[in-house]
Image (cartoon, rainbow, N blue to C red; front, side, top):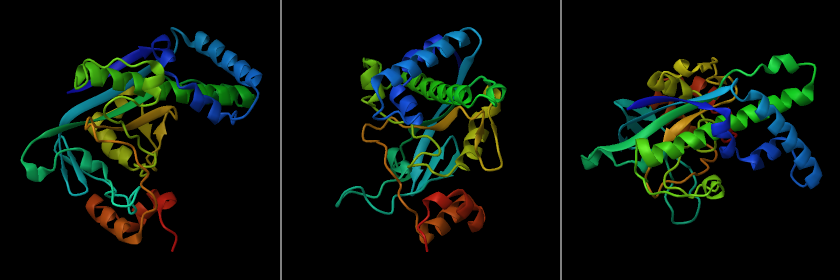
Length: 272
């Protein structure tokens, strides 16, 4: 199934994780009064967006299997990367493809993909006001992440329905106490932004207003994309630095030139 959902700002505001908002402003360790003032400014801006700005999500739930380091999703083979160093001695080197049943099992599993975004907020109108420009952007980013949180909750409880009896507080939700994960492109386990080209083809991101740059970055900037896994054992992990052997293998599986993949993964490569 594939579904598009549109939300009002008021529906997403409770899902905003303000800790990350403060972090974006380098407010860690700052006086409480400064945080409260910034929060008040953000709430005023949110109030001004009510009924004017909306957020959008698109997600798809598909048959899935893992085949080595490849995720097979809706008939599309999506190469993934594997940790080159396990998190702890004796533990396996993880890959996102590990979180669905292997193709060799002969049993179809399920996984998903998603993207969220915020209606264009005219950041350029604040070019001469750096404070307001940053406030617009950081709050928009939090709305995009909050939309992913709200959408993921609805997927777990209703659309996929693998956790129909889930009842979590917002604090528990932000602490990711739920079953399953939604790893996002650009984060430590999925550093390759060119993955967005695959996701855009799969989900038709442009239908919710997302377009991609030649580097796979999403526009509007306040957008999030990634995958959905329900496996109770699934969890987030840091891929770590990638060696030349894995770069070559990944480029081969992607069917793309090695130097192009080196460009997309440059921040995750081991230095020669």
